[in-house]
Image (cartoon, rainbow, N blue to C red; front, side):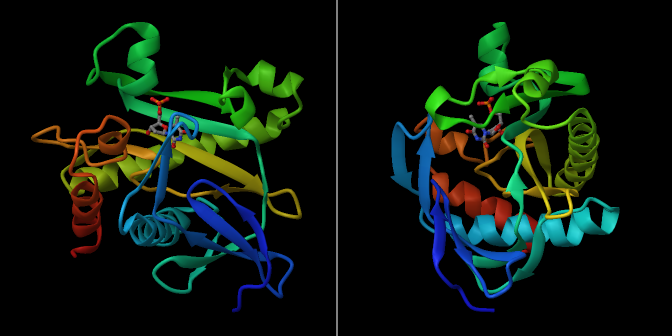
Length: 237
Ligand code: TMP
């Protein structure tokens, strides 16, 4: 499958048309941003890792468990064929352990293990800084239907159970993560975007070392090594 014209360039990926109107090719970049694009940098090799990791988790872990995703076929280290979707403009965040904006917003330390995972939604809108919203707000803004939100919520918790258990076998605690969902042309909701150290907080379960983008966001150093370490545990390399 060949790339045709570029349709879109985001902060971490480019998206290209293909000869099939139902399929796109995404190309993962090494560019990294944080704080709504205020902080910019490069994480060498990140595009390859995020592409391969996301494809592995969607294609080999989630799809066999019945979670529909946009994944179709990995073309090469950085490029993947995905189903074309209309993105639901909600960032869906699941948390198992307190960290990040949760810890800040509610004035608690990071690292508190929750009895039950939490879910929250942000309105995917860079101009507004992705504001937090609840399902009533999402309905009022017509971002999705009630049925779609219920489907998204169910799928997000399924993804959490599968990922949490899998990462644990790699000695990694899945602290929290962000998902995005899309609609196929027939309206079916599928998991889209990516699952990577950019979009998950991953802590070593013994040392609690951060193995994710927080190393970039917080200037902790060892960013590339952390991404490589996740890849090594995931794919044995
Ligand atoms: P938060 O604690 O900053 O709200 O982040 C929660 C999770 O969502 C964390 O795993 C990082 C991920 N995330 C993104 O993927 N994109 C974003 O723009 C933000 C703010 C967080």
